[in-house]
Image (cartoon, rainbow, N blue to C red):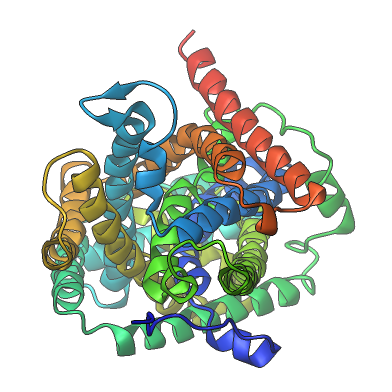
Length: 493
């Protein structure tokens, strides 16, 4: 009996658009901790100097992403199954890269803690639950206004120092909001009723990205905060920023490199969503036939459209967030961290939107951070359910797989909150995950190269131009990983 799932790929542009999805899901998870927090933190520390590394970090990974995706949809195997089949040392039946991935995966769960902390901060500013929380918000706002006024020359350094006193205790408002969001997310993911919420959140993310772009454009009307051509030339000079006491923007940028655009986590997650979308099922099991080759070429083309369009979305938003961080936060000497992280980020919108800034930012921040928290929770459940089979911790059957994904959807948001509860420093949690992802990027580059040549199908052989960019991509990931490792080792001496 023929497989009813087999079907030809669309050939028109509009029909192709209807088959996209995995890249947009990933993009919804990217425009959050990577762009809103890590990218702006890099801009705040480095100014415009490292714009080039942000752009490279977005663009360079897509070739590895597509090569891993090609392997998965042509073989029907998962990313982790592919990694486990790489040549090299195996420990207790699992490849050593799979074990390193597990360490990165745990760190990325800590990243979820940083994300839900950001949501908790945004909600506690919008609706403080206690007097202590309200007092903390007022003190943080006074400090930020003072630094913005100092940067624009409205007040003196002495006046700023008088206002810039130690913040009072933040209280428990942030934790209460964070745990409420966590439990709600776990329930939604567990019961699988997230179609409507995904649509609403995606709409808010698009709206917030548009508002952020408008903010950057209108910022050019204010000479004190405008992004000049000289600033852009400095950002694309491929040079490093001058040394600043107390800051290490290179390490921050390299940690950010791991999570902006398609980070290491998304390089692993993306093919799982391709499988769930049905690309592999539409192609069918490998056959030496013209029909199979035609279906494979068609659905590989759809996957490329999916990846490249999502690249345009997240690269554009990343650049906008970086420029805002460099133009406003760096000039005002504001560094988003600790319990006042979200309120500091809102300062990027105040030169344009004034008293409206905080409200606009909080709506957008809640949307994009929740989108990331939501998508990452769903992705992690699917990948870890597969990992448990790879590591020999459970048997694999369709029914057991579905049950494990469901329970892991419930567990991972709660685990993320626990990381924040134990270590309440959201920016550090996010950058830790970024650092671990930067370390594993060269390994994923190697995996993509191996898949390209080990599982090559003559009729689907990529062009020499594609191979050049794939090798360039893998080499860039290697350089970034080694550079970060050297930077961390050098800081110890």
